[in-house]
Image (cartoon, rainbow, N blue to C red):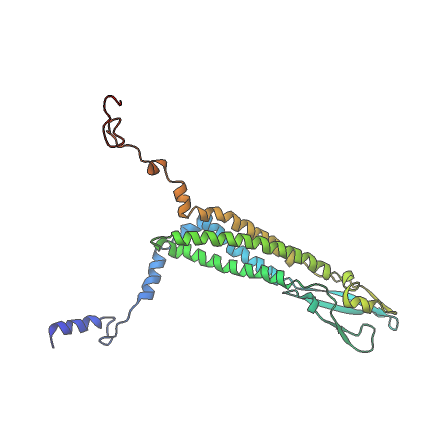
Length: 289
């Protein structure tokens, strides 16, 4: 065998000791991960841009978690002439708050058990819009923080990423404002629709309660709206965080760098030692001076 060919085969098989000839074992992925960890920049989390992104990550979780976990229940009682004991009717509702689809099954002073839909309203569109924005904001904040810490320092030209980050941050600020406003209006409707006196005076239950011999009253157990109220607060806090972070993401773009470029770089001054009148490249004549 030719010595050159033997040397080539040895080099191709030199992956790890004991590996067969010609079966190289690349370790590109592990090398890349080690490089990312070595070049990570944790200081960006202490900067306003990174710290606000961390807050956005946390507050987005609280926003969609409290909104989707705002289900509750309440009671009202039905008293019939034929019975002195009132019947307690429990009404349960939960995310996505399609209130018109919440059934209640009871006899309602009738011989046969029947199902009615006592609640009024359908707030699923506002609820799903708010929760969707919260989930996507949570995911993007996680991705952006990963890029800030592990990837951004390895970009040869990070202008494209900085512009995209600015546009996405601005979009999320708009989405948080619109979704929080819509969700606040929806929560007000949910409170009205799940208030027991409104339940047995409106909708299908009001017809049953208005029959002779049937009396509907508040049983004293009302819905809890704590999670819904807190979710509205987190929604507008997220809007403030994303709107405030627009300025710090803008400072990372080339547009801010060009705007704040020193005047001497834009309009360089004449070189030292250049005689007066030679700024144009030729010495002015005595008559011109």
